[in-house]
Image (cartoon, rainbow, N blue to C red; front, side):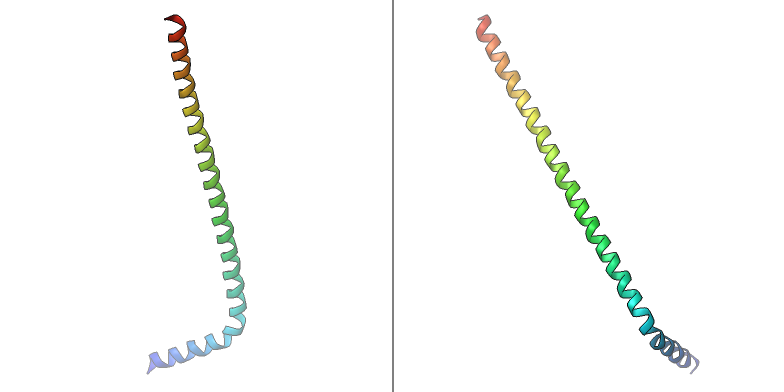
Length: 80
């Protein structure tokens, strides 16, 4: 009996507080969602930038290796 009375009192208090709390909760959830979206967008941009830089670095390494091979081949042809 006591548990039912406590539940009724808590439920009544929640019903009275709902009109005040719902706008606050809505605003808080909206702000948190916007922050999450901005964070995800920033993370994606950072990932894309990192991938682009890594691609450029690999291309530079490949170009240097090709240049070294060409240089060695030309040197061999000159000195033979």
